[in-house]
Amino acid sequence: MRITRVAALAAAATLALGMTACGGDDAGEGTGAGSKSFAAGTTMERLNKAQSIKIGTKFDQPGFGQKGLSGKPEGFDVEVAKIIVKELGIPEDKIEWVEAPSKVREDVIVNGTVDFVAATYTINDKRKERIAFAGPYYEAGQNIMVKKDDTAITGPDSFKDGTKKVCSVTGSTPAEEIKKYVKDVATQLVLFDTYDKCRDALKGGQVDAVTTDNVILLGYIAKDEASFKLAGDNFTKEPYGIGVKKEDTDFRTFINDTLEKAFADGSWKKAWDDTAGKFGAELGDAPTVNRY
Amino acid sequence: MSVLIDRFDVFAGGFWLTLQICVLAALGALILGAVVAVLRISPVPPLRAVGTGYVNVFRNMPLTVVMFFAAFGLPALGSNADFLRIPGLDVVFSRLGTDLPYFRFALIALVLYTAAFVCEALRSGVNAVPPGQAEAARSLGLTFGQNLRYVVLPQSWKASIVPLGSVIIAMIKNSALVGFFGVVGDLSQTADQLTSAEGYAFVPVAIGISIGYLIMTVPLGAFLDRIEKRQAVAR
Image (cartoon, rainbow over all chains, first blue to last red; front, side, top):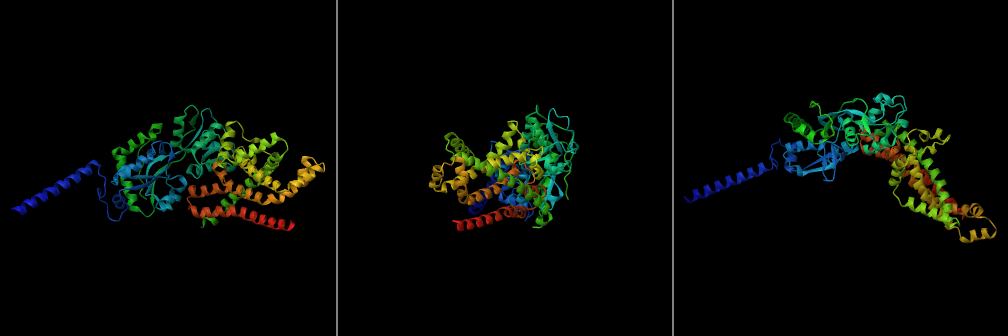
């Protein structure tokens, strides 16, 4: 009799313990090591077990990834990254944000400094040679910002006559794109390390226009509607993707699945409305994930 | 490493632009530095104060800050540095005459900053001349200008040439900053261009631009060593 009693007690205790464990899990919204099951040996399993993740994003991009007084970056890229992290079963406060300015984005992925990069990262073939992209999760387009009273610049073709000067950021895709339109790079193109400097140069009259992705320009226009406006429509399509290691197809597929889920359940839209959407930028329809 | 061969034209273009800005800045800094040095050793106290003030301001400010003032302060004051569009000179150094002022702004910053060091290098040379030389010249009835020109400066030159060379070498390396202040296509900005826009790995590109700077600085250093040796014989 005594033995059965002990056994029953033990069983009850195990059950109770098991239930507490379950309860704990629920409170953390499905986070914790082993909270989600992934195939052994995948990046997802490793990250879930480690319960920590490093993400590269921009710290100076209004609306997408900007580090403010809170000390944490905020923006659309950051929110999208959080959706992915949640799907991995890792709590938000276990994310280590790493600054990934344009020129080191490939390097931090290849060297393994970060687990993935979400940093207004335009998908293009040159970059695909070194890393792989999941997504896109947003489709931006290049546009031109001019002074409010400027009527001479109506689109990229306005730079072809060789008199108008334009500013962009060193090494960015928009800077390369606008080179196709300017007549003489040495006399027409200025490149700075941040768009803030371009805006100052536009305000000071050293340049006639600033060009980059529409959302970034809208961020500046929202702050100073009296001074600036967009000249014409977007003239390129810039699909933003998530950068991962080139050979890590499983992780890429996982992120693609997560993004599609986020498109469908509205968390993607909410992420936009909370961040870049505040500047009045249009989100548009969900882009089609490209599983190349 | 194939980037060094594939994109040799980009490196060469960057090298050429950096060389241009260095030659112009070295000329400007040597001239301005000499003027400031003369002010600092002049017998007139207010002129000395101006010279000392100049050196104190520009030698003690980070170059980045000077660059900021030049690239963003001058436009705020309404200047595009158009006085640097020197006819004739802008044929060789085409960037001097463009509508975009950033090459001129960067040049101004480099010259102002380096001139303070040039001044001190020259002055240390002047101080190395035994005071008896200047006193003897004065007692012969030479004016301050004649004194400097015929007696003090020819002797001081020998003592200042080596520190002066170091200042110019430092300036060449400092010129790497200009790419971050709106000058497109200099050697260090080329690295940005190749790594972030065209996706090349950083290390080979960095090796490439390092070679570019070494091509400018190593011969200059060797030349200085030579001068130093000859000077040792002359003494």
